[in-house]
Amino acid sequence: MNKISNNQLSFSEKALVVFSYILFFPSFSIIFTDRRMDEQLAFHGGQAMFLWLFMIIVVVALKALAAWGSVYIDVSFLGIFSSILFFAFWLYVLKCSFVFLMGKSVNIPVISNISDRLA
Image (cartoon, rainbow, N blue to C red; front, side):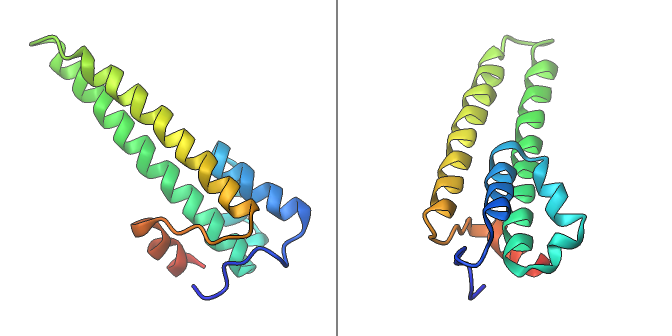
């Protein structure tokens, strides 16, 4: 994506992107409405949505593995690890939102390519 600068976005659009990175649900407001016509909003909304979906799948898989494994052995560390992983992910999402507010590009290795196709 060539133009990732957020200089031409209004305050409400910037706030929507920041909240979509932090809270996940506002990204649906970007992707499933007419806001997706704006290339920057579609890119950041898609990136936030795919980032959150990836993390939810990883955490649910770890929690399910911990629940399944706890029948046979004590693998409570998987549940603790998934909670720590989710917290670290949330800190990374906060970093992404602050980088966006600073006007710099937010590129997440695999997810940016998928989001670029969406935009």
